[in-house]
Image (cartoon, protein in one colour):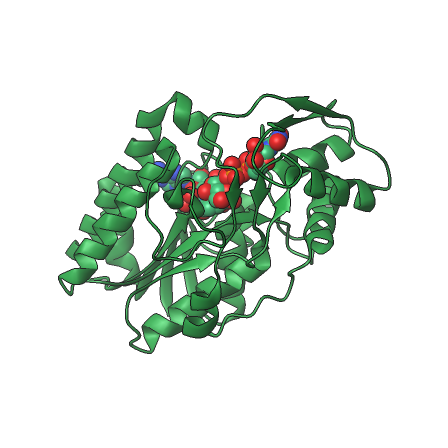
Length: 326
Ligand SMILES: NC(=O)c1ccc[n+]([C@@H]2O[C@H](COP(=O)([O-])OP(=O)(O)OC[C@H]3O[C@@H](n4cnc5c(N)ncnc54)[C@H](O)[C@@H]3O)[C@@H](O)[C@H]2O)c1
Ligand SMILES: O=c1ccn([C@@H]2O[C@H](COP(=O)(O)OP(=O)(O)O[C@H]3O[C@H](CO)[C@@H](O)[C@H](O)[C@H]3O)[C@@H](O)[C@H]2O)c(=O)[nH]1
């Protein structure tokens, strides 16, 4: 298929772009390089433009005659969304509205959308299924939930088929060493811990040790970026085969605490890390673990890298190969 990937120069979008190209698709990336990198497209054509630039978006859609769009472009940092919510509604919600309007203008009928476990807020039951209440507790999650609603309302008119993927905590890097997370000033736990292991930070803070979890630290469902990328390839196959619109959790179905993650980084690094216990970070739910049965049955998705030490090893190998990527 001819595909447009917004945010395809970013961490997750670049891994997906690579798998799509390998699967034989014709991929164009649309990215403003705000947090992405030209090298990360690995040679796929890049339109360097902002989603808010309607003229560039229209010109791109007119020229490409795309059969589907994968929409990754967004701001993604939970604490930043608490401090600056309008930045998140503008880029994540308003720019998704603009993209949907553009898709209608150009007759693009298939969309794969990057959503997030943050739409669930603090779920009552773990693991959380797709039918759980949608009650985000931070503006990032709310901005994504609004996008989900626009997409499903539009799909209900018959104008669009979509697969909305709710990612849990994405981590790790291309085992081939070509791609990985390169964002400066990263906030994600595994990335920060790997930077520390590589001597790029002095210590890591554990945000909260009094959560109602087995060791008092937050529990998350970490999914390897390559397994997540594969879900996108399968989602496109599903839409191309005329499959119905779907909303699917992307996680493994079990979680690890912050302390368990840090122990895995210490194992892979071979040395202890300097860790400081601090207060809770605003906007963090205690535990987020996916019920992943629906994606397994609907798409036939099967994880290949459900192994915390493998996730950490690929992230650490990538971190060691930087800063060439900056
Ligand atoms: N990383 C995670 O753990 C995680 C979890 C859940 C959901 N997600 C979602 O996955 C998607 C990708 O996240 P990521 O981790 O790869 O982040 P990222 O910051 O690496 O990638 C986002 C990409 O979008 C581009 N972009 C942002 N705003 C843009 C705009 N207005 N116009 C054009 N390009 C723009 C950035 O330059 C970047 O290349 C996001 O939608 C995010 O909400 C990520
Ligand atoms: O230096 C750090 C960084 C993180 N954490 C903790 O580690 C956990 C994971 O945090 P982080 O890696 O920042 O991810 P989340 O805040 O869980 O959010 C990620 O996962 C969500 C889905 O679960 C996505 O929606 C978001 O985009 C993505 O950033 C949380 O409990 C944090 O408090 C620390 O203790 N110290």
